[in-house]
Image (tube, rainbow, N blue to C red; front, side, top):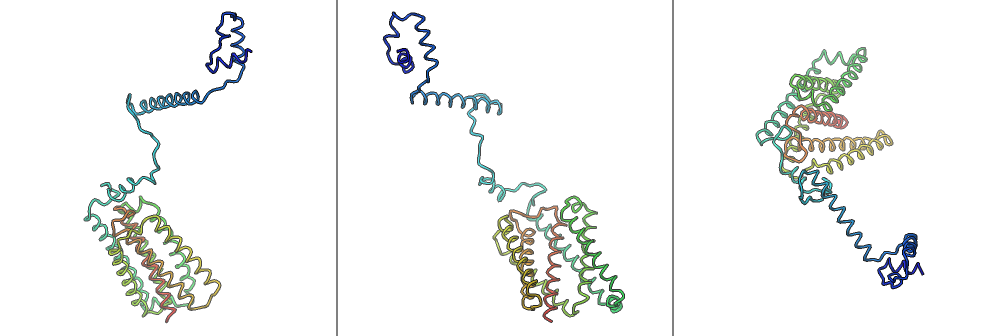
Length: 333
């Protein structure tokens, strides 16, 4: 009896017995105690109403917190949750079209042309020094000293020492920004790099035929000119991360495959020629990307203060192509 009355009160149904006068205050207290112990049955309308009230309260509290954060009262603050920056198209357009005029970007085309001329002048000077050092090895008494069997140990010691010194200087120049941007230090690094590469190239050319050197120089000049023309004519941006990543994976897989084939089928001249040709092609593609970074206004470009960095990477790739072409032509002859 009491349970039915309690349920009727909870659901808002009319209950004559409860409202009658024959119930005393003690009976009413018993009903309240019984009602508190019974499970509550909420209708769908009451649940929806409570959820709306909770949503309103939470929105008010969030709005107050946002007003306090922004220092404004009664201001409709938008949702602070936004899309990640990688999905924001406006940020990509800003990176592509609107560049800030500071030290990280070229202010105008004149500054870019000056940067390109400085890089090319230094690279041509370095290549001239290397050709001079190589020409010195064709002096008869210098060549006889290197061909002497007693001096062979000094030859290999000098070769290993110069290679280690060049590797240290190269890593120091590439990975440390401060030394390569300061005037006295950057010129010293460029000069040491040039001398080390020059002596390595001179020692490398001692055991190759002398008439091949002019052919190799002409071949490198043609390769650089053709790649430069392609860079100026090709409007596609190959410096994007996706393109560079695909190129890195392709070159790594090709190099590993060619090394495995060379180890398995050693002694086959046609296979070694294919390996050398693939190496020349990969280095030429890498040279294309570097010239794109230097010459064109692309998304990822070399900064104006990185003259030494651009010079070193361009010069090193040209020398690598020089040595591979030398090996290729020496095998042919």
